Structure formats: structure tokens, C-alpha cells
Amino acid sequence: MGFYLFLLFLCILLIWGYIFLWFLSKKIAAFEWNLISLFLSRTDTIPCLYEITQGQINKRQEIFSEILSLRKKEFWLWEISKNIDAFFELESHIHHEINFIFQICNKNPKLLKDKKFLYIRDVMIHKSAEISRQVKIYKKIIHIYNTFIKYKNYSIIWLILPFQKK
Image 1: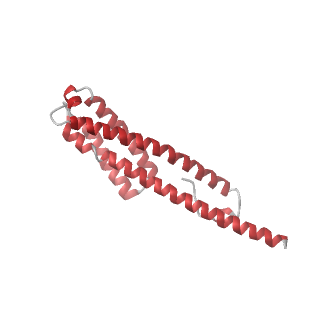
Image 2: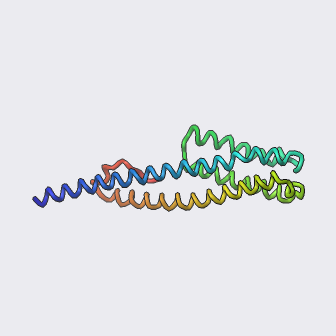
């Protein structure tokens, strides 16, 4: 009798763990899509910035060439490879390029008076702040998920569940 109760307990624990990890993996997937949409909406404003700076800064083509090539890689990386870690690393490079472009643009007094430029700058700052908040939440959820996966892998019974670290 005690052995059957123990097996029943293990089955319930296995089912509960599977449901919990499944819901947590769905939440992680939703966060990834949310982050990707935030990253893409931020980089979608780069062509607007490119057009606003026309005639305002010297060597505009050279300044924007790196970020335009990174945008091409961004499209390929997400639409074709679906590698989230490489995508986040690429977005870090794009973020540094955006900062570089704004450092150059903020030295131009004509651009600092242009309402379109100021609007684009505020939009990008707002989107970058939102991305930063969402990345912090995402990292916390990933940490919780990976902790459960680590404990799951300590048990032979839990190894049946098909979840891996992120």
C-alpha cells in the first residue's frame, strides 16, 4: 500500500512539474517575442533618423553604414536562424551604434532645434528604457527557469521531462 502511494505521489509530482515548466516556458517565449518586437520597433526608427539628418551632418553615409549593415544582419538572424542569444548580442551592438549616432547628432545645434529629431530621440530613449526594464524581468524569469531545470536534472524521474536550459 505504501509503495503505491509513493508511486502515486511521484506521478502527481511529475505531472505538476511538467505543467509548471510548460507554463514557465510559454511565459519565456512570450517575453522573447515581446523583447523582439521592442527591439525591432526601436530599429525601425533608424531610417527616420537617417532622413532627418540629411544635410545636417557631415559624412552621414559613413556614420550610418555600420548600423544599416547591422539591421540587415538583424533581419537575417531573427527571420532565418531564430537564435535568440545571437539576436540579443546583435541588439547590443545596434544599441552602441545608436548611442554613437546620437553623440554625433547631439553636437549639431541645428539638429537640436529640429522637432522631428527631438521626437525621434525621445522615442528611441523611451523604447531603450522599456527594453532595459523588460530584459531585467526576462533575465529573472530565465534564472528561475534554469534553477528548476537544474533541480529537475538531479532526479532520474524528472529527466523524463523534455525541458532544457535557456
